[in-house]
Image 1: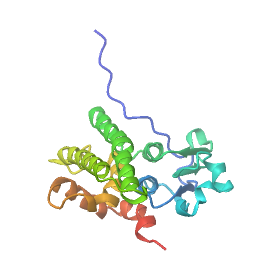
Image 2 (image 1 turned 90 degrees about the vertical axis):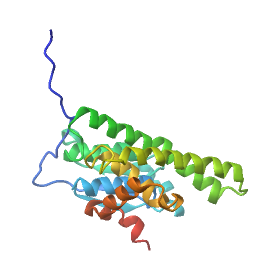
Image 3 (image 1 turned 180 degrees about the vertical axis):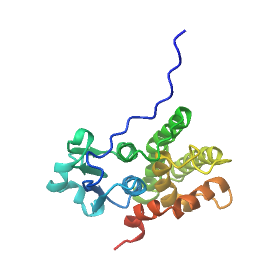
Length: 229
C-alpha cells in the first residue's frame, strides 16, 4: 500500500527580496470588485499603492488604463516583483485576492478541507452573489422601466444566497473557520448591500460583518468607499 502523503498548503511565492519589497500598484474603485483587491492587499500586509480608477467618469476606458487591462475592468494590479522575480500584471478580483494571499503566505487555510471550503465561498462570492447583486442594481437603479416581478426575483435570490452564508457562519467566526481569502471576497458584497438584508434575520452574518469591519486591514481596504471625495 502506498503511504499517504502529508497535506501540503497551496504554493506560495514570497517576494524575491523580503527586506526590500517592491510596491504593487492596485488599480481600483469603490465597487465590490475593487474593494476586494484593496482589502486583500491590506490584510496581507503587502506594500501597495491604490490608484483610483473612477469608472463613473470613464477612467477605465482611458488609453493609459487600457494598457494595464485591455478588458477595461477594475481591479487590476501591476507587481514588479511577481513569481520568479518577474513583473506580473493581473486582473479579476478573485485572482488578485488569491495572489495576495499566496504571495504573502497569509489567510490560506492549511487544512485541505478548510481550503476547499474557502475556495467554494470565493467562487460563490465571485459568481452567484456578485452576479445577483449587480442584477439587483440594474433592475432597481439603472433600467428605465422598473418591473416589480423582476425586482422581486433578484431580491429573493439575493436573500437566498445570503441565507446560505448565514448557515455557514453559524458556529464559526469566519467562512472557513479562520479569516481567509473567502471572507475578503464576500465582505464587500455584504458591506455595500447590507441595507437590503432584513434586520434580525441574519444574526450570524451580521456578527461576521462586525468582526470583519473591526479588522484594521479591512478598514484600510475600505477607504476607497468610506473616504469619498
